[in-house]
Amino acid sequence: MTFVNKTLAALALAAASIAALAPIHASAQAIDLSPEQPGRPRSQKVDEAIKLVSKDFKFAKEGVLTVGTTTGRLPFGAYATDNKTPVGNAPDIAQLVADSLGRKLELVSVAWADWPLGLQSGKFDVVISNVTVTEERKEKFDFSTYRNDQLGIYVSANSKITSIKEPKDVAGLKVVVGASTNQEQILLRWNQQNIAAGLKPVEIQYYDDDVVLYLALASGRADAYLAPNGIAAHNARDGKTRLVGTFSGGWPQAAEIAVTSRKGSGIADAITVALNAQIKNGNYTKALERWNLQSEAIQVARTNPPGLPKK
Image (cartoon, rainbow, N blue to C red; front, side, top):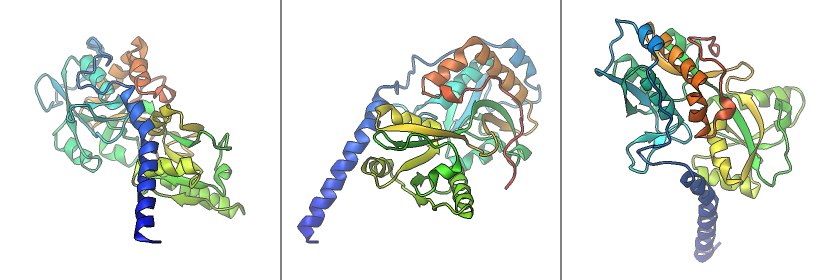
């Protein structure tokens, strides 16, 4: 291939990539990314929750609930248009918890790998960042659940695939998944199970760039995308992809997302009561609906429920 042809090919791929990304940007513009967040649900104090906070619990700041949260991807958490204010479902849940405890909210953006140390050191009071309850994590942390951990399988809108309900349904397909993720481990187990049953193996694909990922789906280079349902559902608002199956994030076990606090610090039960008050008064539903996460709603918050087993 000549230099000119290579250049033209590169330009064509770049143009296709931009076209693939445009719907994602369009969907992001359809939601409120302002730092003010006027539509964020707010609550009155919940006295029962306040009374349950241990007198020995040491808040990072007086009169404030300091919450560690990651700001990687919507709908869970990202930066507002000012590039410094966290917005998304996790900040919305954090606001409701802070309101319930009668405290101001301060959000601290933290890298995923750093939240355990930041929480244990007292840099923030709790972490609200799509953390799944596991038995291993329960050895160091307490949990107050607020959402089901759900994975979704998405295909191109014009795909002939209509439903993926069990592992055998992915046999022979080209499936995109994030490297070193929980969903990758699930897909690998499905693949091993299928091969043992004499079915065709899955062709597993990895992409670091969402633009390239969605271009692969649109072009047919990939058949499906297994991802956290909230993220994939958010991007599917553009109508270019559609959901064909959901699975627990702990398949085959059920899994839940929770507010995370220091083990035995004395605030977990208070947060659980606060969350249940918000479920009852409807604010919780509003906080999920704002970010298209209503399909992951729980009926009742729980303190330290059974978590995913140790590997």
